[in-house]
Amino acid sequence: MSKLILCGTPIGNLEDLSPRAARALAEADVIACEDTRRARKLLSHCGIRANSLVVYNEGNERRKAQELLAAIKGGKNVVLISDAGMPGLSDPGYRLVKACTDEGVTVEAVPGPSAVITAVAISGLAPGRFVFEGFLPKKAGERRRRIAELKDERRTLVVFESPHRIEESLTDLYEGLGPRPAALARELTKLHEEVRRGTLEELVTSVVTDPPRGEITLVIEGAIHEHAREVSAEELASQARSLMDGGLDRKEALARVARDAGVRKRAVFDALLEGGAQDGLTEN
Figure 1 (cartoon, helix red, strand yellow):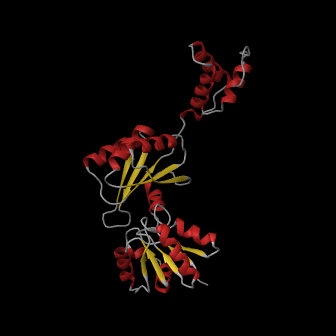
Figure 2 (cartoon, rainbow, N blue to C red):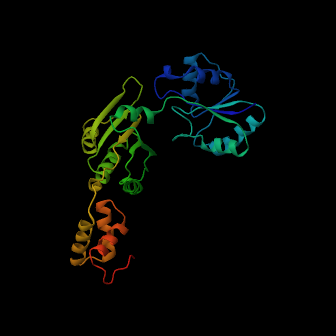
């Protein structure tokens, strides 16, 4: 039965292509790729002659997805590859997969190397739970807003970045997240592979004095709430009363104490009630 096969390709070292991936490429009726030159380099390394090699990239994926779907429905097996890694992850692929699944066409995956997993594994940061953010927005304002949204994310953060934006992005990350431990991994599995470790502040200095080249993956420690310790009801009530006595609106006082203590506003409200500050109190 004809199908779409998503084939993970090496992120740098061509020897990382699996035997199964090589077989899928050799048997494909059509290989869809981002760049024919890079695809031919990989195929040549494996001694594979493509039956048909077509371009599928950001510029043509809407139109090409329908053409490739038609080819599959016409009996051809299509293998989709990106320049590096797994198609669909910060690379074209989603629209074709969606078109196939909508039509009931079989979609398979041949896993391969991943810059995300590789960077997390060698970063020295907690690998148990992480969130992949892909590329941060190019525009400074949008990037800073996105970073602000990530400030309280407790899982390890993984971000892709390009060499010409890395200084700006690291500066925004430092200003938005503080001096958290982080790792900058570049050119993973390639000849000039490098991992720089330190705080975000130290990494900013590093890229200013020695600008990195090549493909970059950033791994950043998640938020650690210093107030995660258990705060007694008496402390919550006392802090809230102090803020209100100082002229702060009650609603804002509840919100601020709750945020700083890492608890729900309801907990602060209940603490005030238990402490006898019931006059005129309503939860909202």
